[in-house]
Length: 282
Image (tube, rainbow, N blue to C red; front, side, top):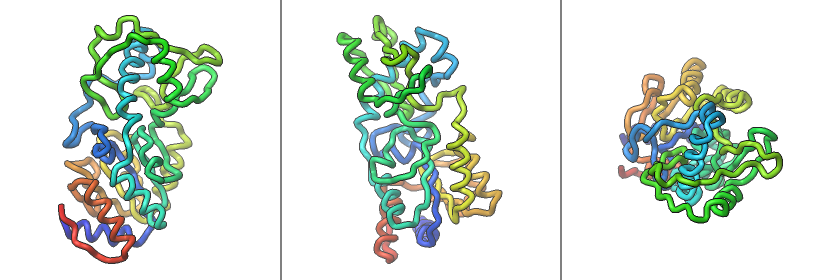
């Protein structure tokens, strides 16, 4: 393990790193992952775009649950792993960041130019006029429309959807766009939607120009993220993975570190800053 971390430090020191991050990077911020040590397969069925737009009851259920979940996601703060990635970017060693997460914690830690593959829960989009508003404003409107709502989340998913007893949904009012009256949804990619082409193209361009693709906290179970590992392998670009547990990218990786990201990443950032090799304790 120590040897793998040291080798990874050497790769990072050469620069040209592109980061691909997943839910495992945010667990130390109190957001559970899907399949790693802090979580399991997603609780409940994810909302699909078709159901959200076509079923009023399902949309009410979603907004009540998401309203509760946002209190957890919205209060989350960057952890040492996010800060380490931002530090490596400031040092000029990380050229790009692609994230599958919707929590905005990379940017909150100081990173810039982040490609948010699946969007960001902090934004709300009108499906009719396309207007974007902040989640804080949406939360205030939902609070005002539902002064008696006292639902309690029994579990939170990484996508901000909370588990909630259906009995607590009675009378929950959904609000629509103030400008045109259209349906509002978080500006995230639901099942049944595709990632916008410009985000995918930008991500492929970053991977294609990288010296190393560094995967952080992703099991790479879904093709949305794994395709970038496959592209890197096809182009002969080095792949390194830091994750708790197995990933589907391991056959393509030259380095695999199964260890806490909150320990490994700060160590690598300190080593890059000092230019010296220090022992890591895992």
